[in-house]
Length: 228
Image (tube, rainbow, N blue to C red; front, top):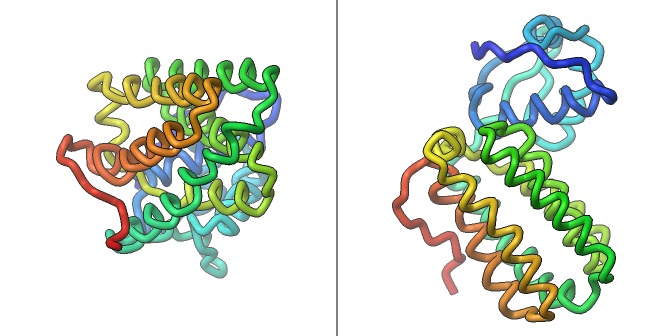
């Protein structure tokens, strides 16, 4: 079983525990099929079992864990086909939405998007995957919100959270995650210019990382685009 690092006491303990556990599952620090308990995880994180149990219930609703009666929680397994399917759905949803988003972002919102992109890049530079993934999630959720479709935002955010990125730690150590994080700034620039098709193409490439180098840590190309 993985040993998680104790947390610094945050202002919002529940959200921090949730982000930490979600990151541990996405990156494979908590392995597929592993059975964990709230008291044990709480002891590792230096918190009580209560916020851990609450976080795990949230993660159960996200599809990242399943409850096991009287035992705890089991990390949900994801097959290669599952990950391919998730990526295919994301490609159908998120990049085309950029055409709508390109004309609907208020000028003042770009400062907020840039701030989140900066924080995401900082997480990559510092190899803090929990911070990187949290800000990456917030960035894309905020971006999609300008399409004016709450169902789209919620669905895309859920799919993003269920993606597994087992190679991301190695990429962070090699400095390659920072290069990918800079694509957020590129996307902001393209959207600010009003180039919807350009933003669509850039986000499709960005999502492709999640099924190629981010998933495996290898540089081999993987084409996640569904066959026509």
